[in-house]
Length: 106
Length: 121
Image 1 (tube, rainbow over the protein chains, first blue to last red):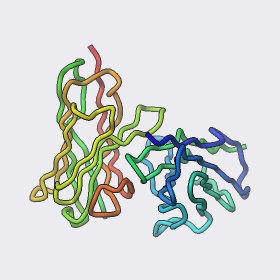
Image 2 (tube, helix red, strand yellow):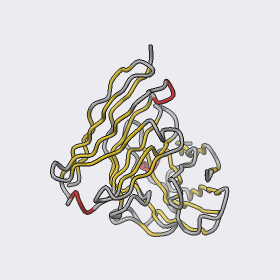
Image 3 (tube, each protein chain N blue to C red):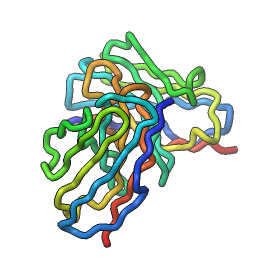
Image 4 (spheres, rainbow over the protein chains, first blue to last red):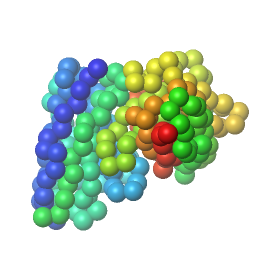
């Protein structure tokens, strides 16, 4: 099974900050990585697919990059609605998720 | 608007069975692959099973293979998950999820709110 390891597991940030979350795959997954945002009590929401493609309707302050085993989700100017938990997920084989990164208000 | 509404969850004893259903609307159902993804409340996410648009291919996580069966009825715009030999570790919120593509390629684009399954004696 392919393991996805996110870091950090949590972070504190302020509105307006630039935030970066990283995800490492246990083997080469090319660009088969997606990113999701989950707010408390809600289902996850797809933000980025194929490592860097922004889903329609998702604000442009979200971006993704990477290939192979190392991937990054960046939020350029953190907004109040961005405080949530973020998950990476590989779609190369059996769709495993990272353990999540909780973005909290500083 | 894409809507996915799960039902059929509840309390089951270890070793027993449950059948989950998902009613879909707002899109052409037989154009898309579908999945079940589960989440233990307060914990992480686990893909459970997927099915292609025409039921021609299905796939399962190792943790449920041989016990769970995914199926769909395109005439009824419905997805199902038959869960046999339930274990306490199957306790989770089960989400019905639509793929971006016609096959189950693990791109989880639209999610239902989930139905809670609790396995306990």
